[in-house]
Image (cartoon, rainbow, N blue to C red; front, top):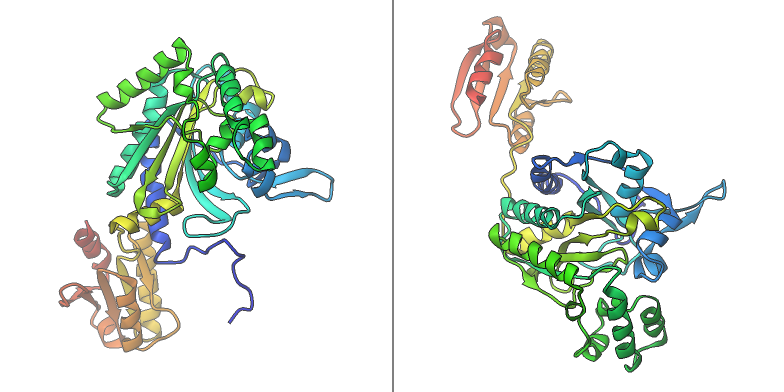
Length: 420
């Protein structure tokens, strides 16, 4: 047994459970691919300043949770704690916004890293699928992304989730609200760190999960009461588009999310079966992020869906995903000549796109058939010296138990027909 273990707060994805994670990623990505989103992949680490500027220097992510380090060359880098800043940086660097087709619609899937206190649903290494629509200010785009996330979850069989929706205003109306909220927070009995955060970004205090803080926030001014006419109209159109699409949502005046770059539309998907870590997805509009990281004005919107928490939500609802067997045909050779012949047939089946596996290691019939059963294969091909002398192999239907002799030269065509 190895003396090494996975680092604290991380996990290994191992078959057969790993198939669930792959199925979830595919289900989330499917509606995005059908809606004009192209795949993007960014490095697992970036310049520290990218996240400090974009995510926000006062956020817990930057001040407490980011894995930052210095390279031998003196560069300050960080493992990516979220995906949006990296994707926008890559799009700007590649000048995708100058190709004349806005918005630039991108989706991604990968691992992210935050130094947090590990618990169920909260890990130091976690997996997300995300989507970003860069370069357009349109309520229909905000609604599209929320609808696509809803579609992805429903395609998986999830039903017991709720969509929380809010508007964070823009650079015109948020400063007025910011001042009103700061006045309110200064009158509370908050600790020094929280008071300091209130001076830098008071909206972050609304996102504080501690009970003693939340109790004091009762009666705090809400941003929706300070929205300018343009933001009110924008938000109302998002709401109307969602309603027309049959997507239910709940207005949540205290929803701010944990990142500084959000403006106007912000939303979360929550699942009440997950306890304290109830958020399974979240996102919103970030019209000023491009300028924060040195780019041009590019109003944008996006979201990230947590693969880990989505799997937990499926388990909480008792949803069993239909995952096809990884092997359709399993070959069992008995003897050296059979090994040569059946290995060639397995290779031929694989070239035709049929999932096939082989009994390696010279096992006897009993041990090889146990492996065939464990593989989940629908059919098993068995051949020995006598079978080959007669020019046949034995084809066994693993569901019915029926076994028939099929010509060696006909077995591949026969399996093609049977497996459709």
